[in-house]
Image 1 (tube, rainbow, N blue to C red):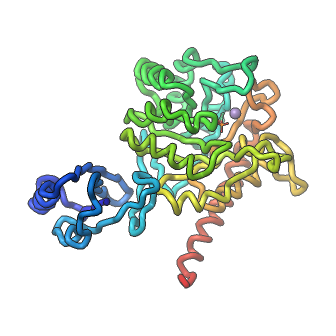
Image 2: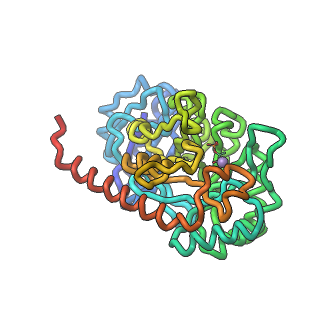
Image 3: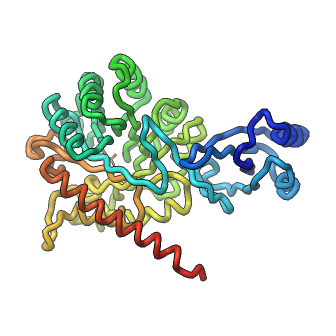
Length: 372
Ligand code: PEP
Ligand code: MN
């Protein structure tokens, strides 16, 4: 059961005390407080754990501090959108807000290779007015003979250059708990010029040790990529592992699923799940057209298939797009065939702005539509 408090009720108020006294008198109930910081107000939610079936929801709702009581279904306890739970949620990190209503483009390098290419990428983002990027330092590769990423060695220049070009958030994959520590230290050593969003890759979608490690730290938010061979439900449950550790600042990323029916794309595009994710959970939703499509093929209308795919996610309300770029895709050490050129960034961004505007208009239409 979740108790949503009236806005403005604080721990020092007698109404709050009275509610806690009431709950403490009930046997076998543990109360965990959680605050959601929205754009308008901060919402305080009390999560009741234990024998909540014995509680009378109407009686709880009668307490003066209580706005509403939500019965939690068994699925997705912390991240699910439970019946009656209408409050907007999300989080702010290093001055950037992430929620189910806004939108960010994370364009950047799949794999960091050298300082010159990293700087060229950051400078292009800066010219475009973007403050978010992706930078892969630790690369999980299918073959042990392929380049595995620069690892901790590149962190100092990645962080320094991010700071130089006013990049606020860098999505960076980690493949084991030790990488979180390395990022932690390197960021401190660099004087925290930027922020990091820890990416859990599709190959680690059910690496519960890594999920738990990411969830038990509060410094960095998480970008969780859907497992390419598991159900959506299994992936959301993996996010619950992160959240039960205490960190709910999670963005859920769709990136296509493995199927021979995905061809000619690298993966079968699953962006039809954007709206389903927003209905089932309160997490912001990201789409990754690069790893879904896997190539720079151009459709007869002149747009890249990767653009068409990104548009499918954005027109359905995706809150973030993660895309591979490289100053010289032909020389990229990882995923060059799907990387866009820096010269394409302004066009890619403009295309997404067109589609996002279409989504905004679709939302206005939804407001006029009868709810039959
Ligand atoms: C990536 O984003 O670089 C990546 C490896 O993605 P995924 O885990 O979705 O394959
Ligand atoms: Mn990649």
